Length: 208
Image (cartoon, helix red, strand yellow):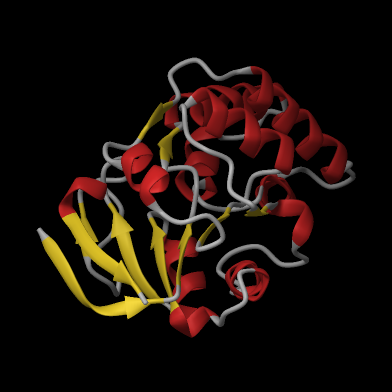
């Protein structure tokens, strides 16, 4: 059990891999997209986790591709496919215990996709939900976390961030937050520069 001595003004969560496990969906959809576009799905899946769809498409798409159109197609397919999405152990209990207005989600997914996945996993929708449409630069840029903190009436330096992917962990650290990595859905991710716990049953913290 990891016990944090510091009190935080708010808690900020990543979504995929942190609050819910959507690996099976992401792998299905991105593999289908890669094959349809004669790309290597293994290379795409290796770097896609925790990043905005548009950023992944821009990195791998062939010259002349309408990247926004392709990203929209991928997100539409992911929104339609919720088979196998489950909450990370302890996530629902924790979110239901946190006071309204003291927590937010910062995800690289689009808004509709985020709501669809949270609902499929049986998790509540927060008042502050920062999605791909709300930011100009995706993780590891810290702007998503700084914006969420601002909307909660605090600063990122006063927040505790839960993440799982390297890009997201770096985004939280870049924002000046304390970051805890959740390893349940990403056990093979390289050791990050922050504490790692298996799931939300393995931590205790408090709000100020």
